[in-house]
Amino acid sequence: MKLARVLLPNAEVHVALVEDASVRVLDMTQMDDYQKLSDILHAADPAGLAKYLVHQKIAPVASGEVRFLAPIDSQEIWAAGVTYKRSQQARMDESEHGASHYDLVYSADRPELFYKATPSQVVSPGEPVRVRADSNWSVPEPELALMLTPDMKICGYTIGNDMSARDIEGENPLYLPQAKVYNQSCALGPVVLLANEPLSPSETKITLEIARGGDSIFEGETALDQLHRTLEELAQWLGKELDFPNGAVLFTGTGIIPPDQFTLEDGDVVTIEIAGIGKLINPVVKA
Ligand code: DO4
Ligand code: MG
Image (tube, rainbow, N blue to C red; front, side, top):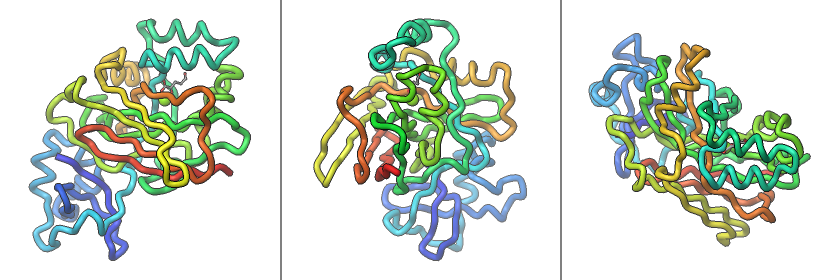
């Protein structure tokens, strides 16, 4: 089952259950404890609760008529890094002085985890992600994102774009926060796949396509079986010494990196697809 936050044609924002070609608005007035998408995600039985809350007086709305919003309320977004071999190689290549740090963190017990965004810094599907004005080498990072309850249980999955300035992080690993955290550097959505069943690592394909002037100029693919750590392990490390009373979203790292000569340009369009979840599409601005 998939849930989303949607903007209806009448400009109302609702939590909705997503079906093949339509969405069913949930009636959040029925129970005081369930007002937001995250309230449902953090409940003991999100799927049962969502079915129970389907609005009986609002007819299904065609998916094409709604705008999908980033499926986040008040959770912080964090990200894991260097969790795929491809990412380890790319960081070592880009970083003249910091290569050994990336090599070590790939195989260390403790993963790299960094703060990525607050909800107000996240862009929704269809909204522009941005290349920093002071970066000449930036890429999207297509990542499976875990929706985590306050006790760090994985309650759902969505798609994240961890926009990254490779020249800034490559110059010095201590510049990582500036390479990763800036306005419009994080996109999320369009839906949350509930975590009733574990994802199949080999069947959960992740693809990235970048289009320029209507033509596809980069395509890459990986799958969850290339992830060097378990999803549960990443969630546990995040919650080890830090409480998340509102839950959290955790990006799990990228396994697709365009060739070193590639950088995003103003007007490019980034499409990230994760099998079983959906497609996150954002145009790019450089400003
Ligand atoms: O260490 C740099 C960041 C790595 C990252 O974001 C990733 O591997 O996805
Ligand atoms: Mg990343």
